[in-house]
Length: 97
Image 1 (cartoon, one colour):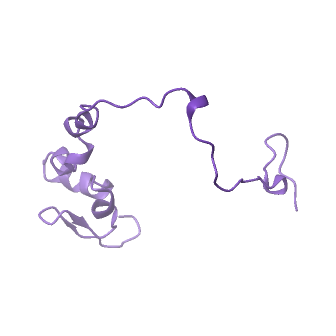
Image 2: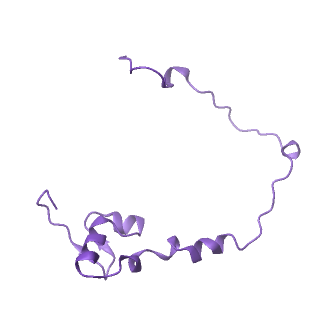
Image 3: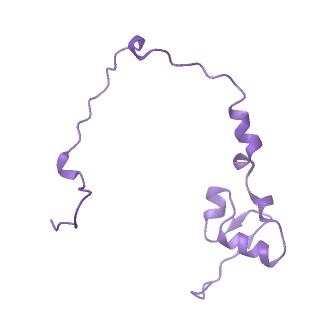
């Protein structure tokens, strides 16, 4: 690392000191760099949930269509009103507040 900081990658435990490897369950840049240095295939360390075989399992089942919106029950929840003062303007230079 250019900062001089030492970060540890443990492929057996699937951990890295940066934390991304544990949280996202896909190899972070440090794991990919380590695998490249050791001539290992980084794709072996991608969690199964990201693989296409698992994604396809979601779509195996039939989805029930929602039907005509006119037949849906009336919504009885809170009504949200946007605050126009918090809206950002998209044109021109930013204005100081």
